[in-house]
Length: 208
Picture 1 (cartoon, rainbow, N blue to C red):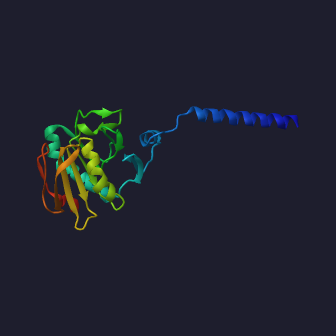
Picture 2: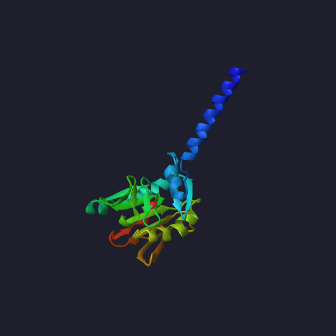
């Protein structure tokens, strides 16, 4: 009986110690805190939009193909200016609320400022692009334009292959925290990407 009582006492002591350790840890208070506490999530991407943590699966191979096609089309201007083009591989910190997002494509100068080690600051970018999927229509079409504009991203390119008909839209000219200029073309029609890119994008690249 004495031995069983001692064993129970040790178990209780261990449980109390674990509870004390848990109480000593500060729980995430914001979506940003929760994002920072997330482990690596292979096959998923995490973003904070309007104060909400959103975890979604990565896109299809075709989704990635569109981002790579954009990179290849912009390589001449990227090389000319010494910029960096990154399809779906870097997080962006929206300056102001410090919300983290992961665009499908990021165009930035080589010396783009960062938030921490991993995230590029939105105000230092040249352009971001999103490839719309069936599950991201609301985020990419409605929520992302004001988010990127508020963060000072000069150009937002929306590659909307799930629209009817498929279309490409470019947003630019930020004033009072919003894009004031946009242009939309059906896929197959050239689209001018404004300064400082100054490239006529042949949108047929997204049908290959």
